Image 1 (cartoon, rainbow, N blue to C red):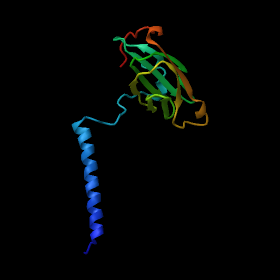
Image 2 (cartoon, rainbow, N blue to C red):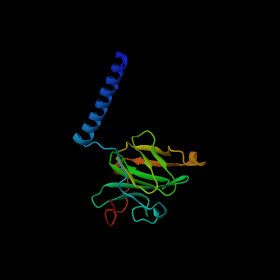
Image 3 (cartoon, rainbow, N blue to C red):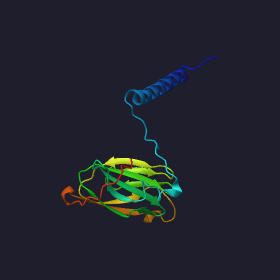
Image 4 (spheres, rainbow, N blue to C red):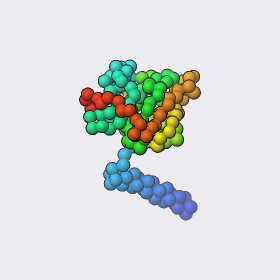
Amino acid sequence: MNIDLYERIWMWGVGVVLALFFTSTAVAALGHQIHPPSHVETIPPGQALSDPRFRRQGVSLDQRGRVHARVVGLMFTWLPPEMTLPADTPVTFHLTSIDVIHGFQIVRTNGQSMVVPGYVSQFTTRFAAGEYLIACNEYCGVGHHTMAAKLHVVPASQWKSPAREVADVR
């Protein structure tokens, strides 16, 4: 079998590119411990509103004084529809959906996550003082365009902290 010179060059080139790709992926995953986010925490979608983690949606403090925001997505709204958070403070968002996949995006920030029924999505971010729009960026049905909420971020000195949770709910 006679393989043309140009075909050999392309085959070797593709082989080298594939080897570089797999090597860089292995180095990132094994050497630097960089992994894609995964859905570790599960929740029965139909029981999300009665689950202890999401029974009270909104802002809360855990036992260590860290700020948490628990949000439930359902056609075509976010629960709660408004939240007030302290500025320049790490806030951990815990998100779930009871019906379909939603996209949770805090416009003009790096706060964004997919909200998948049966799973709890989580991310932590900080905000500058101001008012932010929370939008669904994943088409979820005919009322998708109405799925929005407001996030009010006030200076920490003006923020009225909620009561602390009795138990640290993850």
